[in-house]
Figure (cartoon, one colour):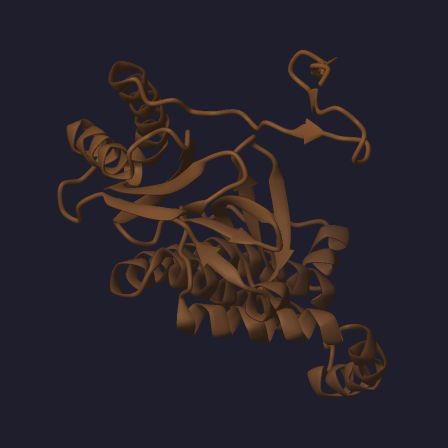
Length: 288
């Protein structure tokens, strides 16, 4: 004999309800579709990051994820009999009104694709834009996020990045640091230039090729001015910048080269005696 399990009428009618079937099918679509969408986005990111750049992978993976989410949402709505044509028509009417308010967001999205194609910077680059300097921490469809050197997060719209002057500080493998320095008028110009060049060549963080640049800038109010430009690897920039200033100061002290401070003489007309601002005393005139 075969056992027959009788299902109560209330449960049987509940299981035969079309709404229940739609809920179950929608649940399965969400349960399977959402993880697949996330997996597809990760695959797109890895492929695009290898073939193009991390920036391209990030933006394309987000676009794929949102497109798949939209397809899943449309499938779920279709299970409940929502006519997408009518919904899109209504959305189009509303979209016309909302579109005027969303012009900025649309401009940022379009600017994001320009940045994707041009690639003026990538994740991890140190850039300067609108007076803000920071590492590129995130690149999105609407904006990019910079992490400043004091660990603050700054959000910059893509449209601003396209329209503004962007300085990529770490794009090239080497950088040059320019140190401006003045010496006393009593010093010999050739001697000072030779000491500056030898100091730069002796610094282990400065590159031999390209070699250091030593220039005579001009005659200042209280000093003879020079420019010392030294090249260093991108990752050694901060160390080289600090050590070269220290080495120049030590070399000048060893060679007896004076770094002057400003001198000014104040006079109050033809009859006034000159005033030494360092001692704040008037020079005494000797009687005729």
